[in-house]
Length: 193
Figure 1 (cartoon, rainbow, N blue to C red):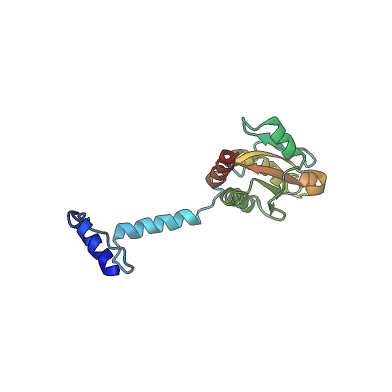
Figure 2 (figure 1 turned 135 degrees about the vertical axis):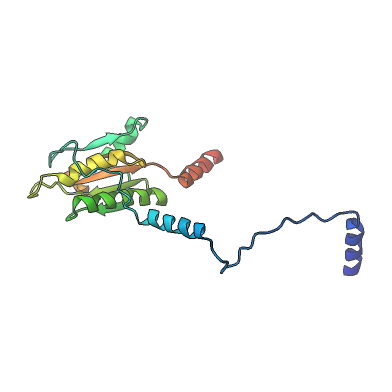
């Protein structure tokens, strides 16, 4: 029976001409690399090592009181959504503690943390910056800087001082925009309805 099927297949394919094959690039490991390839690789490595908070300022433009509320939202964030964030109704999926950090280190950590949350699809996180009430240098330095940095980071939609049980004046809820994967998943769920 199998020979009959093979004969039938050959008979059907006798008028078919094979496709011409284009030359294929050699993708084997160990291929000699050019100088431009090495330069591109070095540049990519340098980009990975650079400070993620490089574009953020270390100078405070607007000082915040240690017991002051910090809040902000991008245009387009709905009132109800911001109200829920303010009340601590969204689950906090990630935390960053800035206690005992210098401004430069805190800047890098905040930028890296927000970028990581965006990549991982985390929508709400909390940054614990402390009130800085008893700081010898400047009261509420990190809090004031966080207030400024979060406004400058592209992935931040809104932020508000946390509720008392989540850190109060010494912490901030941050709402992060959806990444592309989350947007696609949301679109798929809404299509099924």
